[in-house]
Amino acid sequence: MLVFLVFNLLIQLSRGGDIGIYELKKGDFSIKVTNYGATVLSVMLPDRNGKFDDVVLGYDSIKDYSNGTTYFGALVGRVANRIGNARFTLNGVVYHLSANDGNNTLHGGKKGFSKMVWTVEDYQANSHITFTYNSPDGEDGFPGDVSVEVTYMLMDTDKLAIKMKAKPKNKATPINLASHTYWNLAGHNSGDILSHTIQLLASKITPVNKHLIPTGQIVPVAGTAYDFLQAREIGSRISELSDGYDINYVLDGTSKKHFNKVAMVHDSKSGRKMELWTNQPGVQFYTSNMIASVKGKFGFIYHKHAGLCLETQGFPDAVNQPNFPSQIVNPGATYEHIMVYRFTTE
Image 1: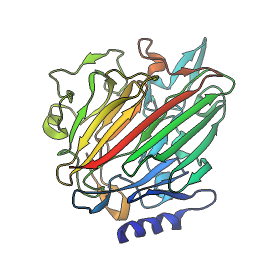
Image 2: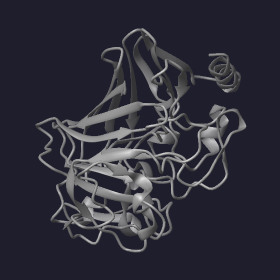
Image 3: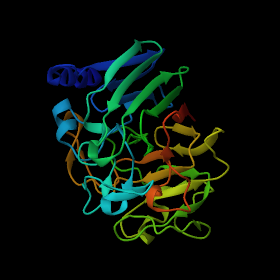
Image 4: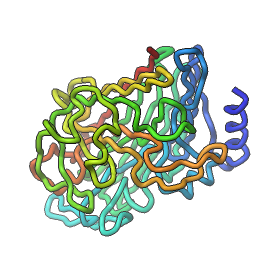
């Protein structure tokens, strides 16, 4: 608890203007978020012996979040993941986006929602907090004005829900929001996550080229290193890949009108277990392949595979892939994305 308070002090000292830190707490379950990037700063969970650890990666100050390139804990958009060649065509108009990943657009572009100061609309410390942001026409090249809202809710002493909504005001536009939290169930400062076991309820993936842009194919995972239909250690076949996992899984039986289980993650050392549900068609499974000696909380240095991300989402580059589910939202319609985490020990 003392270490957590020190972290809180470091964050508080860095804040300024309209940027704040907000805690949600129900029983012993607590999280901290900030309206800078609508970012998850910490999630405190007990292990099987009742010892609490912070299980998400992050930085010591808002300045570090502002300067960082990892998207630790951020709410990313207007379109999460990658858009090939930083452009797309909609209703006969070619839109050129800001390129921030080589020639491609990643997580919304050079600005993106993760670098914005959101407005706090509603805050009840024992229940929920809602942030809003108004994205103007032309921001990072995207068409139309869009109002965006994200609510973090403690549904019980073991469940965290994230509800994302967006409404275009005057033009059709692609929308694909994602929560970019890095998890390490053994504790953020415990090393890598290769011994965590994971089960992904997805029998297909959308393969990518060398620039991590989808080829447009949808292929089965059976018999490959991407097959996690049965729970196994993350590191058990990672050597078969060039770098690690960074791929969109096509979720089985999931649609935007239904709510289905996505994944189960377990750390045998601490006994912590995390389950995830969503209404989205895909999830990006990422194993921190690009983290290299990043200075995190309390000066701890994060290395490759220090955390895992499960970013429920629409498919990457869907605006340029006609056989992928569309991410285009028209004025008068509402984009809605829900995630629910359940945390237990065994």
